Length: 295
Image 1 (cartoon, rainbow, N blue to C red):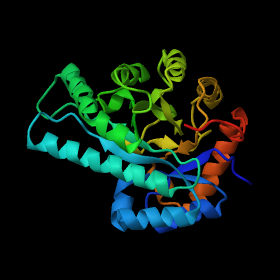
Image 2: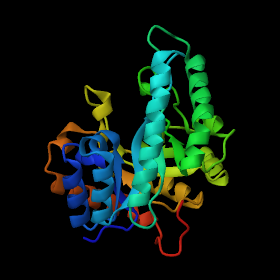
Image 3: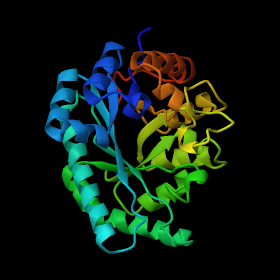
Image 4: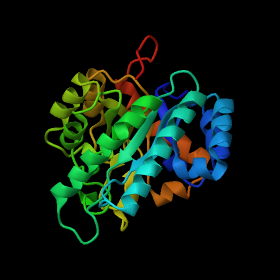
């Protein structure tokens, strides 16, 4: 099966594959794009990661991740800001190394409520302040900071941004080329305002990444590891994909799977199963990249 040209493998799907292997098995499967994770890039070194990516011939769809802004002012917050500046530079270098059509997108996970606090609104204000501090760095590097709302079950420990509307409101003071949003089906499928907010994101030019995976209950004991191949759960990929397409997003579409059973599967087999799920549930609702303006 020849994969749809818009399919990108997010490296989390093949978590145990080192960078060189991840690039190889992705390209060997006929997939033309990959999203990378910073720990894998760091393990190889940034210059080597950029060289390997360039040699692979793959597009670069995103780097995961920056963010975790919800730290009170002090040494820890300064360290977090410095780390995000490094992530911006890494994104720029990897996007430059990827094949034509690569996207300089840094996925941002906001962070949870600070330890010992119950101030959810205050935590979101910390995210707004951090974006204001990093916007100039991102603009100078040509990188889009892509805010990813996470399902509300993660609000306490991972992301105080839970809806696409919240992400768009935080992004609104900034140029769409500097701060965008991620539409991840696992996190937003339940939202009664989803389609309205996808349309808004499109009108504002803020959809920086579209990620797909499925939701199925019961959730894993570690709810972080509850993502499934497209088609194995309850998400209406047809409706969401049509909405994202209508909103004007024409970039790569990442399959990002956190699931221990999938991680324990040989990488080539996991990618083959990903292709099947993507083709049957997402690709049917897409047009060709040919002639499309990529973000």
